[in-house]
Image (cartoon, rainbow, N blue to C red):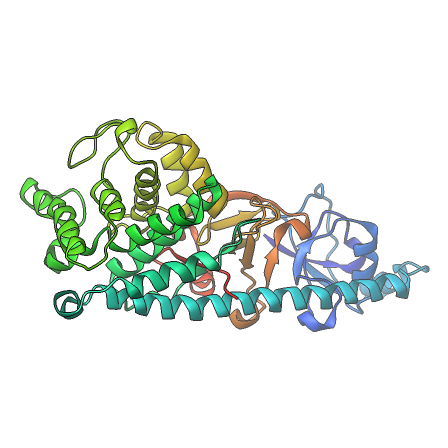
Length: 420
C-alpha cells in the first residue's frame, strides 16, 4: 500500500520511492528502506516537499497521518534539520555511486562478452550434430576446440562466475542441452579437484552424450513425460545410437564411450541400460549423470523447475541416485540461487539472478525490477553491498505482467562463463 507523506513525517524504517531521476540523487537505488539518520537527512535536503512510501514494506509503527495541505507543507520546510549532513558525506555517496556505476558497467561488459562467446560456441555445437558431417567427414577437432575453450576460461583458483544466457532461442534443445551439460560437468569436476585431462574428458563426453537423438523423430523428442512404453523404449534407444555414432568418429576416445554409455545409470541401480550401482559407475560418469539430471529438470518440456528448485529437488529427493558430494559441488558451482532464479529480496524488491558471485555464493548479482527505471538501465546489484538478502524464491507465475516483461525470465535455463 502506497501512501504520500509530508517530508517531516518520514522516519527510519520507511520504504521510500524518490520522486527524482536516478542521476538527481546520491542514492544507488530509486526505492529503498531508510536505514539511518544520515539517509533520512539527505532525503530531506533533496528539495522535495512530499514523498511516497510503501506502508507494507516499511518497518515503522502505524501513526496517524495528517492530510496534506499548504500549511503542513510550509511547516515541513521549516522542520528540516538546522545542521544538515556535511557536504563531504554527500560527496562520498556520489563517489560511491559512481564507483558502483563502473562496477555495474564492468559486470554488464562481462555478460556481453560471455553472450558473444556463448552464441559462437552454440553455433559450433550445432555443427557437431549435422548429419551430413557425421556421415561424410566425422571429426573430433571441433569438439576438442570447444572443450579446450571452456576449460581455459575456467579459473582454477576461485571458480568461474556463471552468467544467465537468454540467447538460445532458435536453437534446438539438443544443442543447448549438450552445451549446458558439458559446461556444468567440467565445472563440477574442477570444483571436486579432478585434473585437467579428467575435466576435459567429461566435458567432451557431455557434448556427445545425446547425439543419438539426431536419428529420432522430433515428434518423439517433443513429447512431454510420462511417455507410453513404446515411446519410452524408442527414446531410450538414443543411448545406443549415441555410442554407435561416436564410435564411428576417428580418434574418438574409448574412455568417452564409457561415460556416454553410463550417463543414464543411477547409484541406486534404478538407471539404464545395465542398472549399475554406485561402485560400478565411473566417477566421471556420475558427474555427467548429475549435470544431465539437473539440466533436464530445468529445461524439461512439461513444467520445468526453476534452477533453485531443481537443486532443492536433487538434494532432498535424489541423494540415493547421486553422490551427495557431487550435488554439493554442483551447488558450489551454480550457487544456492543459480542464474535464472526469480527472487524477492529482504526489502521486498523483486529481481532475477543474472550471475553468480565468486566471492559469496549466497549473494549473487541480481537485476532488480523498478517500474521507474527503463529496462535498459535496470540496476544489476551485488545484494551483499546493499545489506540485502534473498527472502524467498518466486515462480514466474507470481509476477505481474509488467514484472514478467521487465525481468524477462527465460523458459530455457542456459548459462555461460566469464571469457577472456
